[in-house]
Image (cartoon, rainbow, N blue to C red):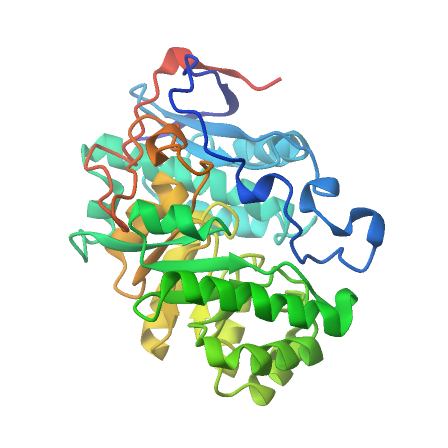
Length: 385
């Protein structure tokens, strides 16, 4: 079955009315979060002050018989020329040859760089191919990956409205760290108070993690980890600038007792291979929408499982792609869920894509519909402007 078309589409779903009023605004609306730009006061406080405002879209791949699959495309406008480049070479290829097509995209992007933005484009095409493959075989993607390795998958939530997440039934919580090196000793003190309060809220029977979002250096990470040791963090996440491989080695040497995780801003499978070989982290966290899609994540999981390392997808619970993949992979024990509703608003009102499973009491079962199970009507799609 040949590919006959690859296009970028805009999704225009029928409007949904908000049913439940929030009790209070979500923590993320105005909270300070440590980030790579924290050293610059004008944009330090909130990542929305400096993140690019590039709209997302969808890649649609159509086969000879008219069957089509969808993959989510972040940063659609700057990536339109990359998708066009792929289409010139992939249209006419066998749509089931996902390994070959992934390798072609990996090599096609070498003149302008495979990592970073181009990797987002590779991911979208790869996900659309897997969705198409599932529809052609009339099977869910997790079935194509070997079947469900687990009947349901344990979910942890990310965010700082801890009382709300407890009410929703979660038993593991990842906090967004508010302060970093630019805040000095006072920031370490405030971070300690913040983590201590969360540990008191959730008690000793729940897990607690800290997301540091590329904001720290080695010295600050070590000092903060030692300060927070009484609160028994399951892991500290993405403490360092992702490209600084030497710093990852140094941090592992200085913090042998602290579980470390990273990977959401690593692209292709290559840095994950490096991390496994040098034993710099305990948990790998690729983003299936960013690092190369299902095909790349499958390579990462295979290498990780052989080395005895776990993989937990970044934001995997918030997409059908991450849900299906995590359900099938033995090396993936948990699923991350960003809770997108403010306190009091049910999760069903944030998980907006029809056909996408919603966590319940801290567990999730993905859809068993063909492909990734999205129930998106073709008339809701129009060419991306």
